[in-house]
Image 1 (cartoon, one colour):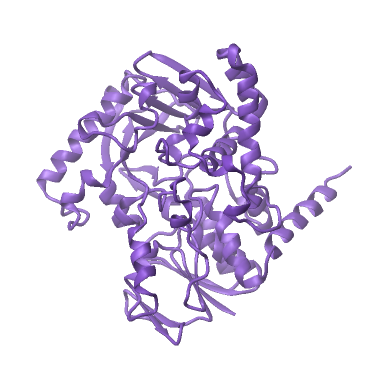
Image 2 (image 1 turned 180 degrees about the vertical axis):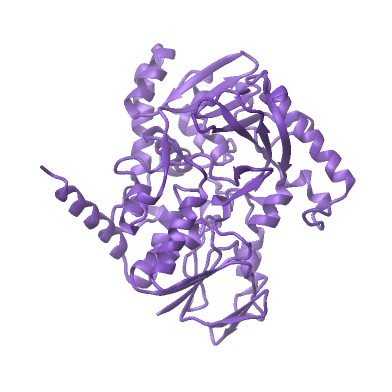
Length: 504
């Protein structure tokens, strides 16, 4: 059976690789010159930078990502470095820094050492985090059915209220929300399951890709091509021909037509809609897809560093102006931005010094909407002045923790929400897809199946975003074709065989 996947980001590549493993002939079309979406690396003035996947989780022993990659036969192609620290977090208003360790026992003991009067609350809270993560079957590669109607009340309650239901100390509540930038959490709205699953993934063991995350994209693409499939770049799907409730073919930006038995869209649903002519979808469905709110975008500063100037840190460095603003980083007054930043350092060959630093701060699309009709390299002087002023604010905040940063910078540039929109094809530059609101979760939940018989959806807008969510959705999408639990059971069987083979 022929399968055509639209988009060679994390979701499209995982889906294509899994189906290739099952014997399907897969063609993946990617609009950019490079594959990977947020996994892409790029080079500027001799320095290689990552687009988005600065830290990852799930690659530890028994982790879901490691199990999937072992099954696909690509784990040994990935060069991964693990960290004993999840992150450091500095509050500027109190000048206090927390170095948060990985590992469930170490994480719990560290928090208790800081807040001994909360010992029992901390233990109950950590237990609750892992309990919520277990409610998602694919997070631990369990067979069965996922349904929001089967989850506990805690699973869908607001994350800030979930934390507060266990923890009394306002300072500890703020500290426990340190993963907030990884899902752009909003108080009273972002669901606890997002907070729990991301927290657990990094508590278990965070890691980074040595020499860039594009190695994962390349490894997944190799599974497809080695099985006889194709991954074609600079090929944006511009037209999807639908007749009698079936996709008949697609045309790309080069005018070439592609036909398949099944089509899987891994791009933003609104971008897909723009390619479909006629009344293939109802006006209500199209209006809904276009009206679901998106998560915020980001502003990123990339700085190449002078040799031997800034010591390397293997963990992310988070900085927040005040604990009272932990939940305000994605919804802020313009004059108060940024409330927080996340810094990621790249190591030199000896691992002692940093070669570059990437600094991320969440940013609302409204900041750049006046330039929405512009394209890369042609946005005008006013935009460049605005970007420089925002870059200066980010560096000023980073200097509070890295006082020698400014003198260490050799070259510096930035990416705005417009950059993310144009390169990654996301609505308003959103970095985490559709916004999941605990007050109306069903509204933002998309079915993998569509009303078009041979068109399926995958990617970060369908379920959970990121490395902890998109590969799981890819499994669900692939299993629509191969059968329920077929891939999950094969992953578990493969792991059991490998475990038995290694027994003495």
